Length: 325
Image (cartoon, rainbow, N blue to C red; front, top):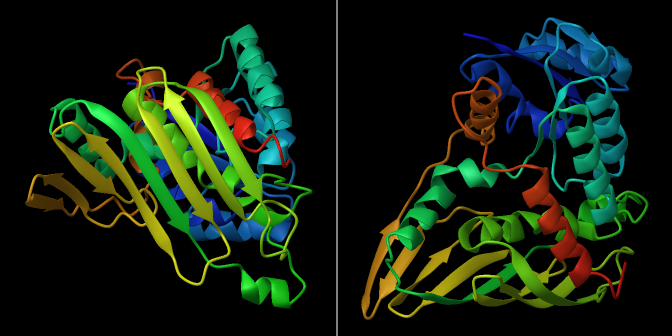
């Protein structure tokens, strides 16, 4: 059975626990080399994770004969360029979310991968997590009848310590992520809603910066509708005094409340009765998703997130932010 040989471009924080170990632990998968522009940090990562090679130049990964697939784990402003280069080199591409800086770049990435005959996967790994699969199972089993609407609320504190030191985290730095945390993080929620209910068609957003701590929006309200008829609305604020995270799916026979970021127990409510489902995700949350990619590349399964679905999410987020960004 073929083993998929991986290279990583950008072995930063997300690869320490969430994703990196999954490439070695997945069946029929091995991590051959990692790259980071800071050579010392690349070498340190390779040593600590038992990776055979490290590089400070992405081309060493892209052009390597012993690498079949590349995981691009850099900031979103670089995803487009690296994807085009990997596609031209004939490498399967697995790119972090958000897929790119703009929807137009997403479309160009899809076109490039299609033109060069390579698959394009995007790290909306929640589609493979036991927690979200439980929600989908409840929906598919008709636990709440016909779904009518979705409401979402998310809150988080400002990165006060970094800002006090004069540091602007890249997720709220307009040079790298003009859509801010809504673009970089809340995209997970809209991808999951796409996974549950199909593509989101109509969408409208009202972004603002209320706290004035950085340039991108820190508060967004929005409404949307899926092609299947589900209506939704939400409030997402990244300048609150306490965390908040709840999404409720409302149906004709009940509701499901889940927490796509904190993963607190799922609650199914029907009438006066409620049932909680405490679901534990794996320690390396991307590993099940990485396994689905390997399965598709080896002809044994299908990955649930490709460039096309991720580009839909990028379009929705871009539409909601169009009056700000």
